[in-house]
Length: 527
Image 1 (cartoon, rainbow, N blue to C red):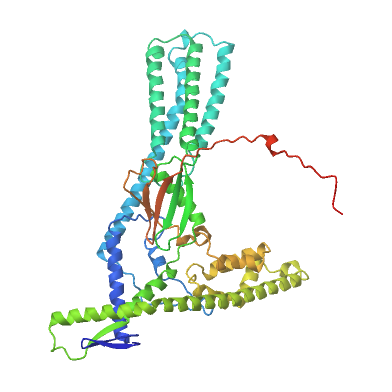
Image 2: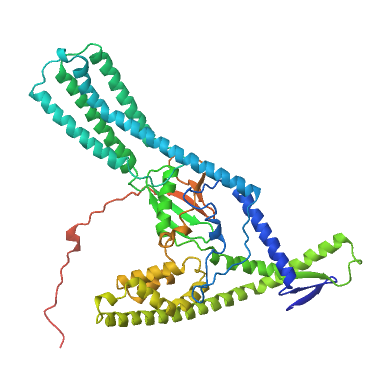
């Protein structure tokens, strides 16, 4: 049955519906998808960084607000906007701003506490040495040669400690974590208790009694600096060395297209493991392209939307319940018949798409090779000109870009990459290739093969705020079977941690004499 069939007095057909019905279905589907998105966003808070526009990511999910016809014309292509601001959106944006302000306040508060603690640590040994000279200078014994040598020891140890603390702790933050780093907080508390204990002992045994042995006071300050150096060594072990040995294998799956990567992780908490995975994600995963996912969704929607049910006998012959039941049975039967041939349609659609991609790629390669050949001719001609008439790489890129723009635009549209590359970024890349004397293949590699996320413009990935979802506490360590989700606006990264098994190796000794053998040759040979 090709396009029409009857079932229990009802007929249905599959194909294209009329324009008004199709517009109504599209508007209803758009309204449903928008309502689903609003319901799903209520469960997770997405904090937008203050340096980015508030709606910078929402435009990435749909069509980009830029001219896609840069290969043919410079006229901007506009359309009906599907983005609107409701009262819920305004409330959500206000809450996001408040959360971002809270994150900034927490970051600066933590930095302020770290600076105060650092000043307390470095000024304490100096205060131990200076206070006796200010409070009871006439009672102090003279400082001999050994005492003066301890001054040099204290000075150099404090300098080493200052450089070590600056290298380990005062580094630019890579990310803002939802919870405090447990080991860092424990080390801060340990240092604070240690310094307070030294001050209590100093106040009771030295300040109250006004000790006259100044060499002993200097040795007391030296012992404090030595202990601080040992605490810094402990910090290096806990913060840096402990996580170097791989203990877990993390499987990262992107929820939309199923891209999978495997990473080895050490003894890390869940939030630190999430940070390490995100750092690898921007370098290893190909850029997320939602346009490639819309083809399968539109194909499934086309199969369901192409079915309509008509009542041939009129509305008065059947009851309302029987009418609805018969319509549903007719729709199910039609969908079952169409499902039998859907794989053929998918096969021919993919074959046709691959043919078009190969055709566009061949045209693009030829156009780019001709453009680079023209550049070489221009360079040979410019060598004969005066130095003032030589064209810079930017001008050369603008001169040859129109010859390849149409072929490049058609290829990017066919492969659904037109929103990832703007005309300005392509010209910059072309000027970069001309400056470094690259080949046409090196220029095309950025467009023929989808690259990692960092390769593209910062507008496509920088404004995203990640949300960590985990059943266990994010400060707890990784365990075998731990599962957590890293969620952003467009997709999610599902992470599953598996413990690397314990490997038992045994040794088997082979006697070298066991490989020796004797070859005996007969003296007589056959003639």
